[in-house]
Amino acid sequence: MGSLPREAEFVVIGGGTSGSVVAARLIEAGHRVLILEAGPDFGAFGDPRWPADFLDATRLGRSHDWGYDSGDTLPERVSFERTRAIGGCSDVNGTTQTWGHRRDYDGWAEAGNPGWAMDELLPLFAAATERMRVVAYQAEELTPWQRAWYDAAPEAGIPQRASLNNVDEGPAVAPEENNIVEGVRFNTAFAYLDPNRHDPQLTIVGNAHVARVLVEHGTAVGVEVQWQGETHVVRAGHVVVAGGAFNSPQILQRSGIGAPRLLAAHGIPLVSALDGVGENLHDQPFSLMSWAGSDRMTRQMEQLRSAGWAPDEQLMGKAASSFDPTVFDLHFLPYSPTHRGETRRWSVGVANLQPVSRGFVRISGIDPEAKPVIDHRFLSDPERRDATVLAEGMQLMRDMAASDGLRALVGEELNPSLRAAADHGSLVAHVEANPDNYWHPVGTCKMGPADDPTAVVDSHGAVHGVAGLSVADCSIMPRVPRATTAMPAVVIGERIARFLLTDRA
Image (tube, rainbow, N blue to C red):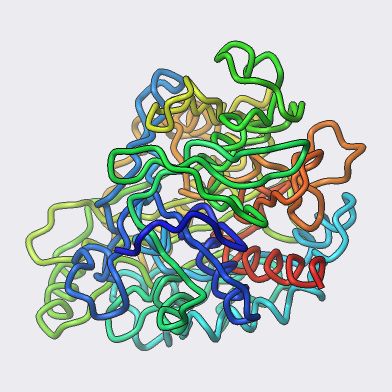
């Protein structure tokens, strides 16, 4: 554990997926950087302190969670897992690295955010892919459960491809591209921080929870941080907030940056009136389907497990609903029970990649450990588009499961089951009664021009109305891309770091 300095050139709040990238690129450019991570720093790759579930790339990790959930905002309590440790959610995710579609990023640029068009970002995606040591599975490496869905896709009109990351392509199914090194989930701390840990210009302090950014005369000058049971002040030349879609807006709100009415309710002096802080929250709504499986599939999977490597997921498809027939707006991914003796059902997840419903994140008090109010307002759009897109995706999975190649392998549908949801209307109702998330929250510090009343940061990540303060994580996304957000989060770190360097040159 590093000691806490009293000042730094750059303070990066959060050593997660994006924060690790920003810090590394600033260090490599010769700047002095302090990372304040609210969770532990486990050291470099190979350090025995790293939790086993963080390293095991066959399944999702669960430890060191922030403990956020939906509270009473949804019909049932839904956990919103976010990781409190160096490396952030790259420590525990499914490792699938997808980019989305050209329209996603061109749309950001067209909304008043120059520098974010797809052609400008492609070199950053390539650099991040190399740094994260991303490698694609081959079709012959797929588990039997994954391969069965891969083989069934063409019959449903979904072509097989070698990669999902052709940004001009529509529906396809392909083996995933993953950041896995010898069975270990290769997180951003390993990829970006480890090569710089020897540099005296870098200081990483774990278990250091930032309460607020200190602003004087309209300029960020440091942070107030809770560390080793005491409150400390660290002065900074520039503060970069990289806490993610749930934590970054909380930090701004506790710092007096946000909606005046919310801040006044908690007795927080107003620094900058930005009504958009914490608003525009959205995640890709998700539905999980399951089948009973078959003796044949069970035998095949047991044989593979006995031989060694049998990860939870290896395959992903992208498909188009009736609302987006020219591109795609759905993901589907088969999950197979990972370890011997597991009783989990054979499953396929379906995600709506372009939701229109919007929610919010708001502090519940000034204590940084107080849980925020997180209300995604999943599936709340009055036209029921979000739920309808998911229902169409579920029907596509049913059609694939009924194909000649899959019917005998998947067995009976258990969830939602044909008896419970036999037609489109009942599928929509099932989706609405069982809202869930795809673990990709974004949007709560929206990027946009100063004349956009909902924008929080400009196209360089600079907070409107406060000098010396930037945000660099998925919270700045105006709209979620048609992707899993792990690689876009890394690219945001790459992009904002470059803006910081050029703006200070």
